[in-house]
Length: 478
Image (cartoon, rainbow, N blue to C red; front, side, top):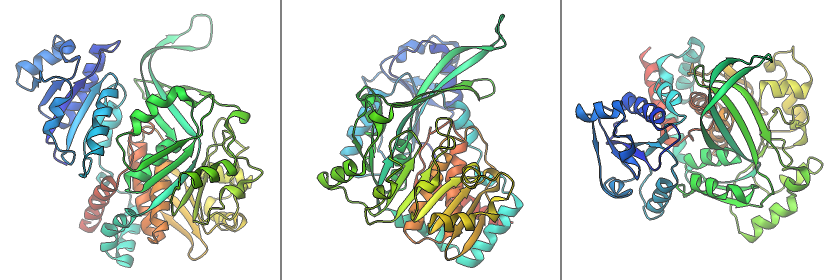
């Protein structure tokens, strides 16, 4: 990918402007030798020594044009990188307006300096840099079996698809801290808050993945009115996402405290709604679908176990006459109380290894030895189990158990990887792409997400295709 231009955009001053500027410069230095400084508060950073040095060395310039007018010079289909300091509200409003009046593809890259440096730099390590031997051998077998063309053409089949996604909307908040040391009177470590960033999680993140694959995404969920501005500012730039908010008094928010030096989580807190407030009946959903005339050819149920679904009547949620993919997640708020057995007769089921162990009440037997029985028990057509570095173990009525070994990505955060994998595999399988090819792209999707913090990015067809081409080229050369 060749960048046409790199911009440092500053909409407003932050509480630690010098620190945030240095973060932004590290992102820029990784990809570009020259950049332009712009934005309402651009003058605020001109006296920072690192900025002064780059200006003196002719590595940067200051664009004095008012507002976001500088971006009018670039087409949406051009690769430009915009590193932002402060909030991005005005920038996203500008983009939404441009995108809604343009027929071209959107290829701009926008990164917020306050949390993206580590993930962005490490993501530059391509998945093809190191391919484990078992993965290499497996891919050679698939090339021999299916040929080359399917790896290039299969993602193109998704563009005429549409999906309805049901489940919980989650706001993921990351607070980055520096460790100060042990508290004097208690066996605790004290941390100083430095920066924080909010992201779309739950079905909001899943919808971004589906739309990134070119699929029209309709989402029925709930969030509080207080989150309207944030959520809409995050999705207004995407033409292929339609949100239908049935509203709740409280939004689900999960806050992660992250040690900056090690990029490790040290604490989490949840804000969860009550069952009375958040429970959404099949009747409500069906009425909304009929009233809004929502068309879809694939239903995705994302049950995070936070009261959106009534588990006594789960079959009614799936009775829309289209193929259904289901994922029930086990987390700190529901562990052991959100089993996949609530959803029998789904077409495709997604779980991770620990969720399978919970379902069968067995931590000893190998996953590959139980997936067939579990798939039959669930009465599903296909079952996909993610097993970390072991890749994906799948089962289907037609082919039995299939292993799809994964790659060796840089792991920063596993949050959201399963959601990206689900979007890739379920979309491809609904378009009759063979299981082996679908799991290949699913592994790529998951590997891209574990290389960033949370749901910092959404997968796109172009990202998956680029990584696939790099991997295939490497495999053929060995």
